[in-house]
Amino acid sequence: MTERFTGSFTQQEPIPEDGIEAALAVLRHGRLHRYNTAPDELSETALLEQEVAAMTGARYALAVASGGYALGCALRAVGVQPGDTVLTNAFTLAPVPGAIASVGATPVFVGVTEDLVIDLDDLATKLAQARVLMLSHMRGHLCDMDRLMALCDAAGVTVIEDCAHTMGAAWNGVPSGRHGAVGCYSTQTYKHVNSGEGGFLVTDDEEIAARAVILSGSYMLYERHLAAPGPEVFERVKYHTPNVSGRMDNLRAAILRPQLRDLDTQVERWNDRYRAVEDGLRDVPGLTVIDRPAPERYVGSSIQLLLLDWAAEAVQEVLRRCAARGVELKWFGGAEPVAFTSRYDSWRYAESVPLPRTDRVLAGLLDMRLPLTFSVDDCAQIARIIRAEVSAVHQRG
Image 1 (cartoon, rainbow, N blue to C red):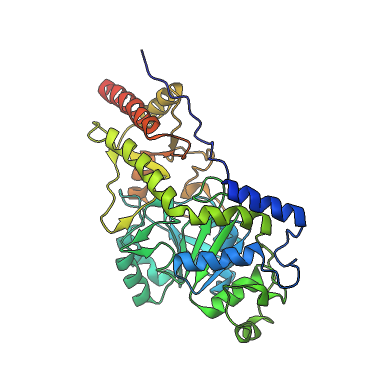
Image 2 (image 1 turned 90 degrees about the horizontal axis):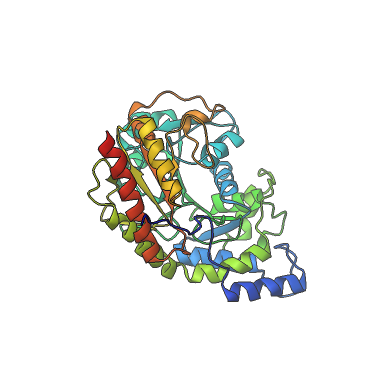
């Protein structure tokens, strides 16, 4: 009898009970706005920022309305102006070039390797074109951050890290988001902590932090932040920094704080599931599993597979056959955007030049979420299904 998977690839775990209780407390007192506090009260959002700073080892942290807002806020805070160019990965999600375009800047796309990380050789040839790199750790893959930072530091290029898929990850023991000048994170439902929408940014630079706080819409209430620089820093920047409101509210902060405390445990659970799929797909003819480098501590909340040099029709046949057995695979090789799988030449607001090596990778790239509502046994079953269907299509030639 042919196996069929019956789980949902979009069903997340429930919010922890202590998060639900904290949310109810906020709803009962009604002070949802982060600056609407009773005398001597510390807001949930300010406490969350303090905890994010402690978790990442950053001096400063800011909670905002979305991961995309964090990216745009970071660009403005480091001084990107309309007409500037900003380097970024060709393999990323639309909010990354979208953030660059939103500040009037122009993305310059850097290629991707078969390891699904930014091509550092291509980056080295393009560093002279911009003074900022928005580095996307796309789908949780970290490049050699030591080499990347050496290249960027030597060229005087400021690095903003998009850590939407790498909260809890690290390179050589340094948390993702802590190599560059700013790290940006997402708390959208499909990320590693879930508030529906939301995000953070972290930095050690006091002026970047102060500008980000004012940009987020603090008015002159910046003294209510617990993970921000002193008032003298705000005095230097407050008259020159616009309000581009994008605050996180106390309700979302309340449900995030307990999730943040459990992040290390959740990372191990994701990686157990990731390894079950990875182990089940080793040595499948025609299929490449991405090897993870030893210095990388990854978070396996999704897995990527390559059908390199397959015809588009054969890749689509794998997708169709897996879907018929309940396994949802996303494909980055399609000419038209589908759900989140748009590619660099889909974003017509940003001029691009062809990147043949990147195009080859994207043409064979499959992506699959691994929600924690799946068991390890579920993931082993999913791997068996993918293995069978890839093998069947590959054997047909």
